[in-house]
Image (tube, rainbow, N blue to C red):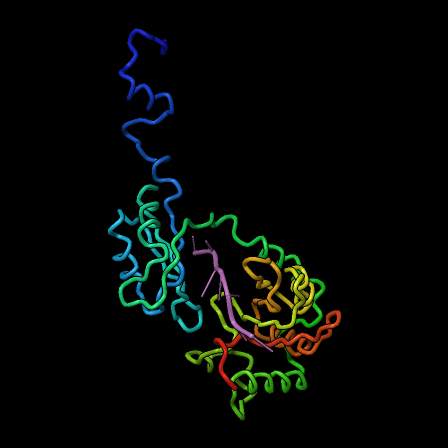
Length: 268
DNA sequence: TTGGATT
């Protein structure tokens, strides 16, 4: 039988066998949760440079930098998976809040979320999506097409824009596309009340189509809404229709301003 | 009166 106390091994080995860990497989426990999420990276940083930065803390198993699907530009966010948890912990200690050489902004380094728990929001949006959409797309009616054309002109600040390019976005590749992010079309919503929460954004934008994500921006201390939020929608047509419909919409005693998100504030 | 980002 197995329990021959007289043949018990020295303490160290005994402790290992008690946990079911063998010398041949020193894995699981020590390599679990060694995956890091890194944000605030310089847009110019390559995957190789990212690895070089982190390699001083241990053996890197995988790395990734997220990029905009249309422009291919880095989103300043990446992942580093170390061989061991302790290496990841040391990398956080050493690199979180630090500025990589040549960078102007500090980076954030923390343990990554579990990818399987990603966005209950995205799952929700699937539920909202199909049956009750007010404006199914893509649009084919000529009048609606014309309105989209005008929206594009406003969004891109150009005087004329051939309607023929609306259906496909091919001619827009390489442009700085307002509102476009790696996950869809980002919409800026201004003039929310201080006690707004995410549900109001879902309710406002959900009827227009596939909503990937919503965010109410809150003050760190008071936890009150700072008056604006963001909504990311999958499809351009639906985002444009939501903007056209909700900009100027009266919510309580406030009039919303809704537009594609632009880069920061530019003075008038 | 334009964030944070989760392979």
